[in-house]
Length: 282
Image (cartoon, rainbow, N blue to C red; front, side, top):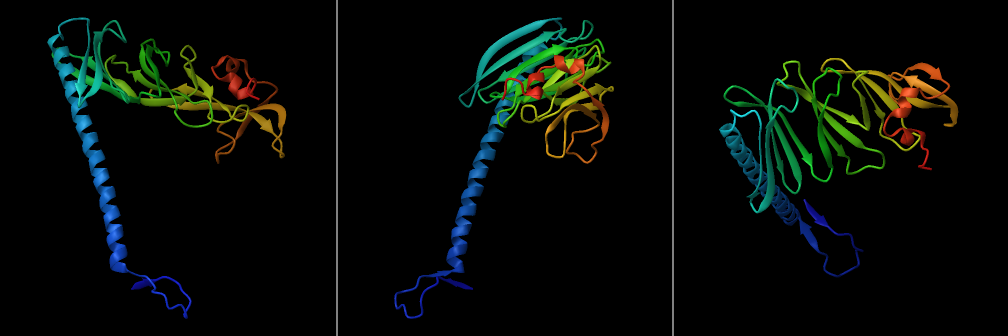
């Protein structure tokens, strides 16, 4: 097949002709360029990964040399392909008084890597590995999140894109064996109430137009207790009533559990409550 440009029949000017061979060659060249760029990116990512892994293995060697100690901390700077990396090795009873854990942090300009190991008689076993983009990282803490009396690992960060309130927490629950951790739980705009064994928070959405949630810990799972939202009429206007539902209003599972005259007191104490009401954001 040959492609021609459109022209008037009486036009005696030369009409450019583009053959499929020429077009295909152009496309092939662009595909080759894209593939080559992808290979270069993958090659660099692989090299970065290898470099960071070596830094981790070197830190582990230092930790193993001090495995007989109850507590050990060391901080130093290294370089991986001219990229500065800060390393911290911290062995301590971080989570319980009976079992010690090793925490190794690697901070480089784009990401923070946190690896946690349970200390055995002669070796360290990895139990948590977390990577966080530096520009979203806020902090990380050790505290009891689910009310079982033992400390858990929490990484707090803030979303880099989007219109609305977006403070996140990633939770790793310490298991009853006091050595290993659960999978990663992620919550948006949470307020943790360990004494009640619940998590309350504000969903993603515009001020006064989003919902609040109430979740309950059930071992290594989370049950939804309810969502709280403003009741609206058919015109989308608020009626002054508050709705407690089993899901967010626009989902297929939405079911009204009860209508209330005001927001329950326990929700008024959560971080981001003013976002839910919209007060101060008009």
